[in-house]
Length: 378
Ligand code: SOE
Image (cartoon, rainbow, N blue to C red; front, top):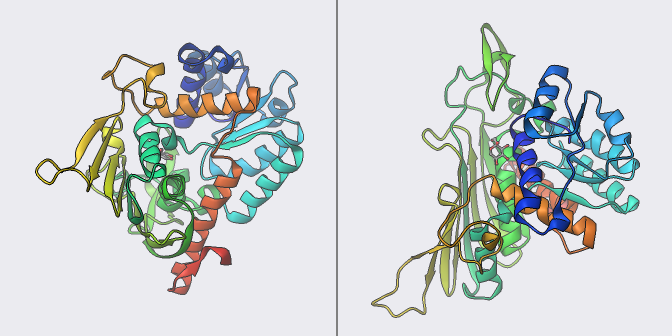
């Protein structure tokens, strides 16, 4: 695994837990973790439970005791490490967004397909029981024809102008800001739930253009210089409208300036027969409304997706004993390892990473042009 900060911890936890709660075939041997700072990565290896550590990812991906490589380093590292891992015959599990831009994403997909290795992008939210239930309800036609899809992904960690210039605020490292970091999740969920985008038009803002230079880092933000400032080169917020191929209308907003919203990831979908709504902050629940219900009793019902019949829920605790954010990572790792070991179907692959990147890029192009952009154009 390359990376050992926030996502490194989330992924390590998944590898540790997967064999305990899921089929033993999913047991993963945590061979090596890699990072540039020797003391940092050594401590992470010991704390997270990796057998060894490396400070040079090139050395790590060449090791013949490793079958697959997990990349959760900042986005600018994704392509180079992925291509090297593929060249060494390894399967790759990469954090989102897949790449800095669409061209790089396409190159990564082509390389993976040519080499015949298995590939995955960590769109973790697909793998929550309530989100799986939403997908099942839509696929069974219970919402009818889909009219509206509305997604919000709101955070507030940048609303303070003194929050320092972390790597997520630099275009050359992150690719984009709220757009690639969190709209990417919303785009993937929309594709997963209702299908492909047709065209988009967006707008964005960078509310604070300069921030204190980063002096020390930990978590999302880190500490900043009292005197020196640097330029923010990504969006603080990006919103866009979408038309889907199935005729549905979409509204999306991603912001890191939504005061009070910490990690507010929601979708609401309206169809000819009913509606549903999901909110990460209540991730075990799905709100569902069916028009066919008797008028006197109709209304949004709250389904707690913790029954053994809800996907993944039965692997954890008895009914009603809820799960959390970290479980989605266990589920995606489980599915990917099954895919590698048994050939079971798997998505999201690099293909889905590229489809997401197409929408991201089409939105940016629409902002540049001030006009709608068809996804086929990018
Ligand atoms: C930071 O915005 C972040 O950690 C994202 O990078 C993750 O993908 C998201 O799940 C939570 O927020």
